[in-house]
Image: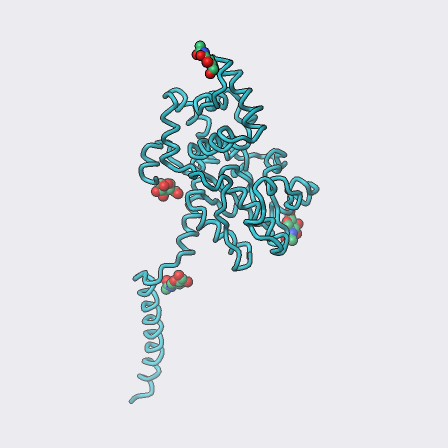
Length: 314
Ligand SMILES: *[C@@H]1O[C@H](CO)[C@@H](O)[C@H](O)[C@H]1NC(C)=O
Ligand SMILES: *[C@@H]1O[C@H](CO)[C@@H](O)[C@H](O)[C@H]1NC(C)=O
Ligand SMILES: *[C@@H]1O[C@H](CO)[C@@H](O)[C@H](O)[C@H]1NC(C)=O
Ligand SMILES: *[C@@H]1O[C@H](CO)[C@@H](O)[C@H](O)[C@H]1NC(C)=O
């Protein structure tokens, strides 16, 4: 064979092999025989972040000042070893996240189930970002993995009512309950528990920023337009999102998100229970709570059409 032909053919042969290799690989990817769950998860995260960013922009929620809001800093817990910041949104699995921070920090000297519910909310062992000097706070926010979790606003509201007003935690079942009764109950001598309708009237009577953290709008608690959360978790995908957070921050493989809840024998607030309570409200109240939580609906992509939402997700 002519040497010139060989010189011409050889590079073509290698190029052909290269293309073949490329397409075989591509084919494998296209068949989706091995779908990559991490990629799916990342793409959902990107969707959540881009929805959030466009709603922030559209509603002028971006702040020009770089000063941190002290009320928001008060919601942020920090774990130094894993460079992890968790924004506390009550009624969205926060007790368990605090347990995890405690375990990470204490080098596994404790098990999640050993840490009592009331204790985890008081323990000085888990630190708030607020307890550090302002320069350190900025460093944390710039360099650490920041995470917040959200829940459908109506489900969170019902969960807060059931947890705080139907149980016997004195601050809520006596102090707050008496305030609500004084404002909205006609029969002052009636000793019945605060109804969901009275509870909602009470919430609607206050400025949003003064609301108790258990029912304050989530975006006011964590300010996601100005704090760039690396993970936007949802209660609706709590297990999956939590596992990813633990792997992202490099937590030991053996650590998983616990599934403990406070009143062990009671049903978690779900779609059916939420609907049952919402039906006790009149349409004017429904419209007003939609308005109160409207940014939570928009920013975190929850539908206000709750009858549809809950019949699909319930
Ligand atoms: C195939 O998928 C892997 C991982 O999912 C990716 O890294 C690679 O670039 C893909 N290959 C092609 C040819 O698309
Ligand atoms: C918003 O939520 C809907 C319903 O859950 C979902 O189908 C859609 O993909 C979400 N959109 C974005 C941008 O995340
Ligand atoms: C954290 O961010 C600050 C900027 O706020 C930077 O100066 C510092 O070097 C960073 N620290 C680490 C450990 O990356
Ligand atoms: C007010 O409540 C008390 C105690 O529940 C009850 O005995 C009384 O009949 C009620 N009064 C009216 C006017 O409903």
